[in-house]
Image 1 (cartoon, rainbow, N blue to C red):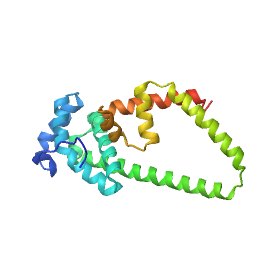
Image 2 (cartoon, one colour; image 1 turned 135 degrees about the horizontal axis):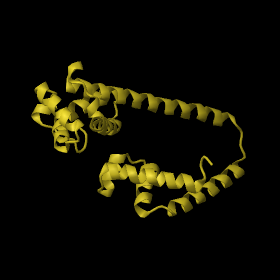
Image 3 (tube, helix red, strand yellow; image 1 turned 135 degrees about the vertical axis):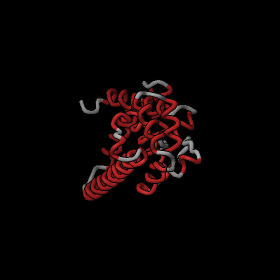
Image 4 (cartoon, one colour; image 1 turned 180 degrees about the horizontal axis):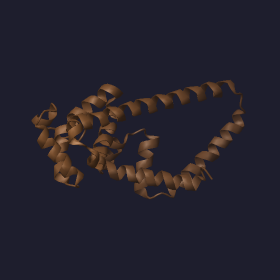
Length: 198
């Protein structure tokens, strides 16, 4: 189950009275955090179930579930009670996000595979390649040292140690949103330092 996801007997199986859930959605749309916490209890379990069935990867399922719940918070005003139940609306978002994650992951694998086959056929100078690689590593280390300690810790855990956002948050005992912000800001500073895209 998703780390930190709260479930209640009413929410774990997706049951509950739709008028109450629709009322929660209206309050969430108005920015009511307690209403969101109550809605979270109702929908988090079913969302994780749908996402996990699509992505078939526990770590991805946790990340996508969190993304879905954030999207529900941000877009609650778009919910139209007359067009279906609250849970159906939320699970539609969950299914769409999960499918997008699978497609994105598969596209990345396909790109890596194509790049690997191209690189395999292309001869290269091992000494030059090694020298360039060492110089690039030195530049990256210099740019990493220019980050704040918190940014550097988050980036290193995520990109060098292969931790997911929730795992980085757990290691650093920090909220996942804060971790994402640190990583994003750190990557922007690294990009600027390395001159990527300039």
